[in-house]
Length: 178
Image 1: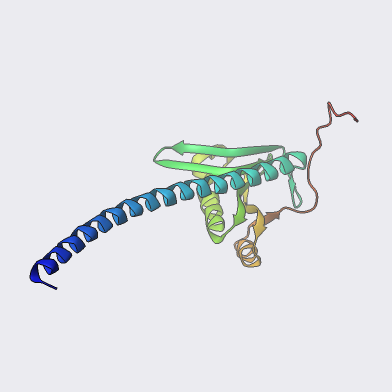
Image 2 (image 1 turned 90 degrees about the horizontal axis):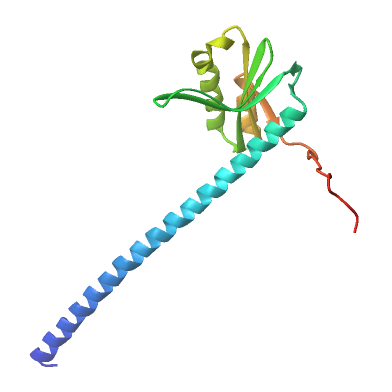
């Protein structure tokens, strides 16, 4: 191979390498966008599952407003208080004349939900002084709660609500046989 041929080969390799690097940059950008879209979709699925769990426990408590021996007159979903910089929001609040149950609902309950309940119980009276004399109970609710998380909740004095059996309503107003 001559010096000229060697120079031409090195030059063509440099051009090919530059083209490969440009293509690699484009591919990385496309992959990053794809991952962003997948993460967005997965986040939407998780949010949907959370809404399903919240609706299930809310409807169940509306139908039977009782947790253990405590009976409630009112079941509120997404009880909120405070300002933008200092907010309080609880998924479900069950209320009677003397007691209040604050419930954090997750599709799959993890330890952080127990920590959220601790925060809710500790901060509630600050945002809702009307209930200053009420006894406050805290709990977690979910479609799946591991034994360890349930034990942690109980250890901290909280109740645990799990889905059980066949709970549904049937709307049959316009039902007919065909």
